[in-house]
Image (tube, rainbow, N blue to C red; front, side):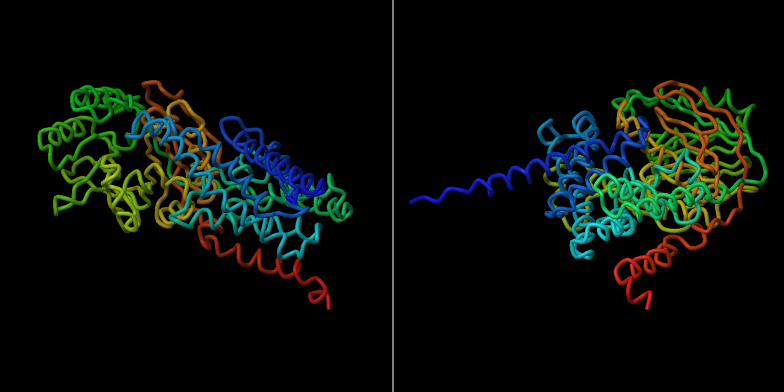
Length: 498
């Protein structure tokens, strides 16, 4: 006779499917905690619900469902970007979004599985391990396969009294607070060690309100003009629109010359290789001499071999005919280059660019200043800003977020830039082609900005900074000193007491 599943087996499967669906929904709620929405409480609630779903078992599957909802649905803006400005049809574009969720979903899955496994299924200890292991998981997400630390939990500390901790332990270490609050909430809602949870809640709130004050810049004051030319992405690389592009930048800069000490243009503002365009190169040099101001502008450079291309930032200094250049060091995989382990991708998608990373300090050094260059994608990586800030007095983040249209991606990108300012104790000057162009203070506060998708110039001032924040001095190594003792206490409490 055929065997039919028992009612208890069917109920168990239905229960698992329900838990997976709820975990997916909790993950899908996570992007709304970040810019431009800012519902930070939603992240704590969503993560708490996810942790409760993990406690009964099947931790890896539940964690994967949560990550798929968070990063799969959260990256929806990639599809219109790849379809509108890339060679992909809608089905392929959405397949890429799914692939992002499939890959990044592994990190929450690993976190959930490791927390439950190390705790030997003990609910209280599992919840204790969640925030500690989340710090390590976020560090891994920022480094494995070149890293993609998009919308990290640590950035939720922005605009809260706890933001000062970012200058100590960086964005990865800052993960401890929001995930810790979620673990406390899960314990209270699930009836797990409630007294200990209340004590942990008091400790977390105390840590948040006793956070060190963010660093302040105390150096020389400079006037800056950030040019937002608002060049449509569909026309940016159009040779027929090149004259309009260059004239627009020139006119806006001419107006800014009398009001600023330095003029900044966004990423790839000059959409050509100046070395191959001597007429345009001379045209640009003549105008910059007339403005008699330092000019930082994004552009492309071709190496002496005639084949190697770099995307980066040029600096013109009055009185000099030479342009300083620093190139982008952390490139966008599949967008700016093809990883060496899949070279055949060029035959499938021939329109992928082929840039090469540069090396060095990434700092432009005119007389009286040192500008740390963060080109677009580099702004989401704390180690990139930290490397520049070792010698730079101010960070300059040039980008072209026109790729993303009017999606949340632009605001989430700027949220990452705000964290870089706090971690390094530096002003960050953010200039974007279509926005959001802004001046960001060392405490992460947006001092001033202009509306996106408008043609305008942002005028303002900033101060140089020589601050040496703990994160600047030690980087992520402080996390080891923080996490290892705590993990030992949680895993082996009796041995520690004895």
